[in-house]
Length: 85
Image (cartoon, rainbow, N blue to C red; front, side, top):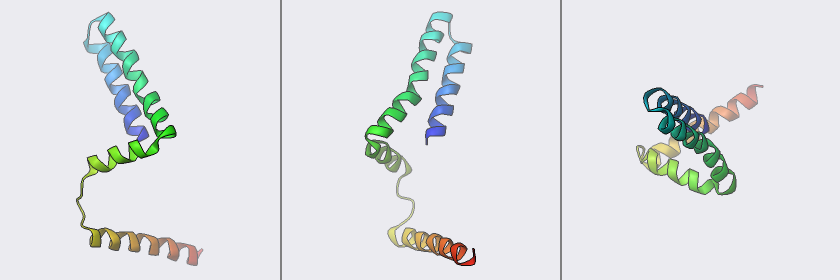
């Protein structure tokens, strides 16, 4: 999520410099540069806020039993790789 926030803010900042008038574009560029800083600040002090936002955006595509099965298979893969190594 951090890379997506940083890349998104970078794209918005560059777009504001290219497509908007000088003073407005520069002001918005500085404001967009603060988005990743705020994201890291919130994530390091209260990571539950970021996790809750990501969970609400993802939605519930899987039911609980399908998710549990997927997690079990994933962890079994870890066990198998550890056993073989």
